[in-house]
Length: 120
Image (cartoon, rainbow, N blue to C red; front, side, top):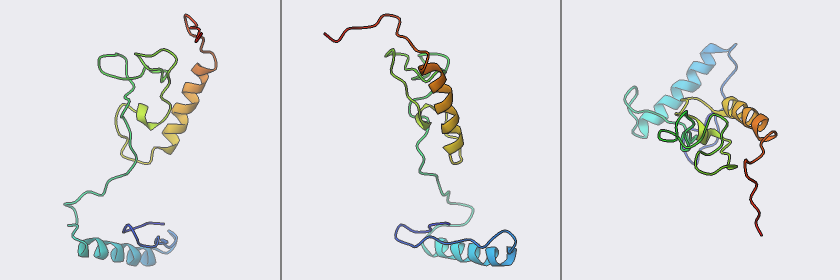
């Protein structure tokens, strides 16, 4: 399904086995976008997935979290979502986010702070 406008109903694309029907639906979507002011091949339609806001990296000077998703500045704080991507993937981040969650969970389950701190 595709949603062309904020208040539009989702558009169901016909199956791949019906290429002419799909072409017709996509053409209608393109006409609607052009009518709304988008210029084909000049305007970019972007993903709303926020990624890379707590960048993962090898150095605290260029990133927020280590390759384990643990924050450089705060031991025991883990950022386990698409925010830890080094940069935006340009595609739906679901599978990569699952992989990061799994990788981080393997580290977290064995995590013991170097110096446990009392809250008393």
